[in-house]
Length: 159
Image 1 (cartoon, one colour):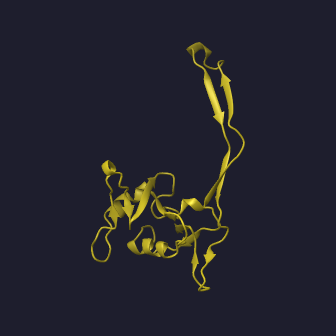
Image 2 (cartoon, one colour):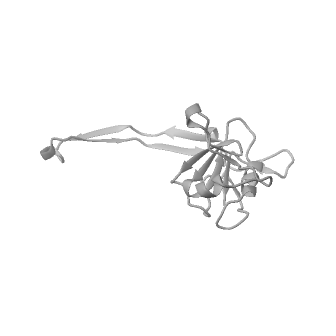
Image 3 (cartoon, rainbow, N blue to C red):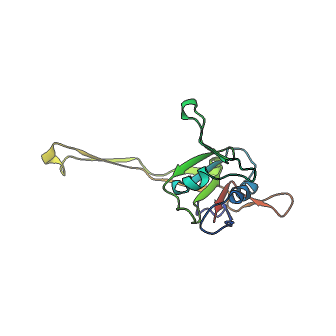
């Protein structure tokens, strides 16, 4: 997603951190087409986001309830915490995306190989399974709304 030319990049309000206004700015340019958005956020931002409040001093993060199947949300949008995106203060530490606009194409495979030689002395057999898969955002450029000025995208990245 971070390398997609169709993604919009939003300038961070304050360097090396994230603020409430950053989330609002990202939401303002999210494409309003079909599909449900999701926040993809590096887990190093948890302490910052979980204690963040709006101007009325309301928490903007809701931890959800796993026993009832209620997801954690940020401004009402589900959050997926991960350790694969950049850390706090780096471009891509927060992404807002509608993943139904991401195309996945299966490639070659799966190819299966078995070897009983390398672990023969341990009475073990090794298996190797390889499959090639590729994916990309189907939107090649940010979309221009009918007002002729506003650009939106199904993927918004915080710079």
